[in-house]
Length: 492
Image (cartoon, rainbow, N blue to C red; front, side, top):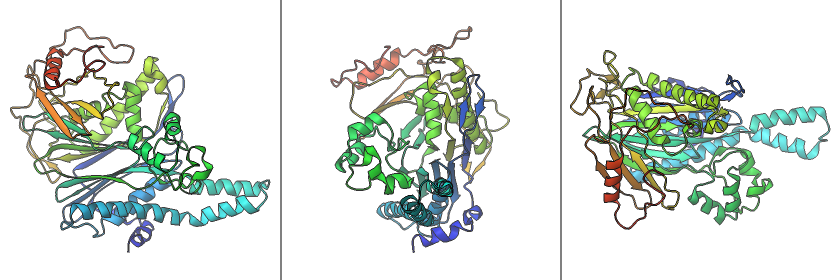
């Protein structure tokens, strides 16, 4: 029976005995608030959670949980979801429809089981609030204790690999990126799904259908302190939503725990990596550098670390540490974006490699496949279509990863070596039509930098040293179907 497994095993922490996936690494950093002199202080205990288990029958389960107002929900969800998915519920004989149903049902069990654990506390809280004198100091102290016990929620993103097919289940504002390397060593970056946030058109339409004023929600940018429109836990928006101004007109519960399921996506022949990121990590990078190229930046960081590090744990932690430093450095610089970087929340990054090699410790970073970062000046604010432009980056090209271990590394033809430049691919993907086109250069996009070090501008970035004339020409050739490029590509 669903739910029984979850509640029973929560008491014994049985998930500690499950085998961890060795093709996965996790990096974390606690929240931080900066003083005017740049010194950081943690403002509350870490509230994120994650899971990374290898089940039976070729099943792998990963998850990142962004908790708020305490870690209780994130911790409960990570253990309960594992119990609901890795106790034989999933087998290789299941169809895609079966798996989507099981995933959705598992999240429903998490929600109901969590509220069962705080049901007595909620009842006592309601009793004390309604029937006893609110002036009593003891009553006030007890109400405060109960509020701490029952408050809080979490957003969650879960990745399931079964039969070498990928399924993503998302609730809230975390992010998933799938980076696939083609046979010629280039990367394609795909963001799977959109965050359930107050600027998600589909979510705003869902809320409007329930009677909620979606325009007010969009303008507010948050609901009861969070930007997510789907959450686990958080009794305030589940049971007391009529007392919340933005939600009071809703005909039924507007903030839901139902996951959006993406998949399956075949991983046969795929080389690359999967990234699961907490909202805190995404926000820290976007606060420091803006949201335009955040996906490309983090993929470049991961690929660079994969070319140098010898463990996935070190790769993930190095990337998190780098983002933390970038965020801090922008704050202390006093430059334009410093006002957005006075604090950051807990950060979690989970990396799962897909037939992806780790660096050989004897290789230099260049020999391992150096990454040449670039920034594409793309802004399509006038367009209403859900279009993203991604720049492919050369992956480190070495041997394959077998059972989580690195075999002997060899340089292949596609690996950049000293004096050799990588090629770049620009890919435009329209998520409404699911169509895509790409065009490749011959490496001439990349020019040698002068011997003089470039100085950063007010945003903390160095001036571009890449000639994009060919890029603009190729883009114009592939998109000469009458679409206006005004306000889009080209120097602004």
